[in-house]
Length: 171
Image (cartoon, rainbow, N blue to C red; front, side, top):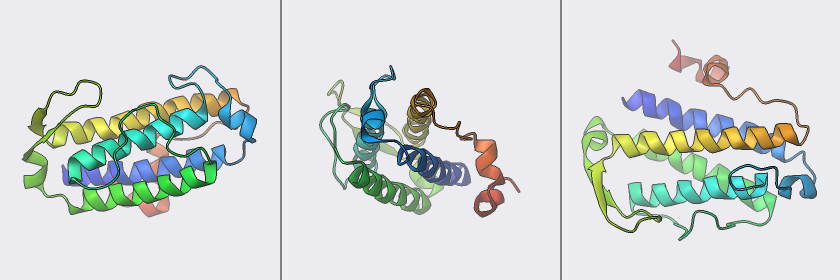
């Protein structure tokens, strides 16, 4: 299972780079335009994903910044948001690289933002949710970018697995 989660951490980093590279080509009005995604704009969606990642990483590690809401704007400036995303992705890769099978099977307790009642469960299922959540909202980012006229992004894991630096996951 560890290799599976390590692959997801690397995929997350790879896919986020593609989304942020495409977003960097937009003008500010496009970047902030409400295109009907769950959080409206690309700006708000990218901020949500970072907020959720920080919340989960604080739960998983006990360290780091954890926003109190899921819809707050952590960084109004795209350049600062992009730098924070890069740092968080590196943190995620390092965290997952540090895990053991015993840690994945171990239990931890956290308190959800949306329903503040403590939950105790094994680490592996919430970690799977963590990566699935990122993929879900990256899909919304892709839709938003496409609606704004950006070229379609090849975000499928099959493309990731063909990238030279990540081909070892498919071998």
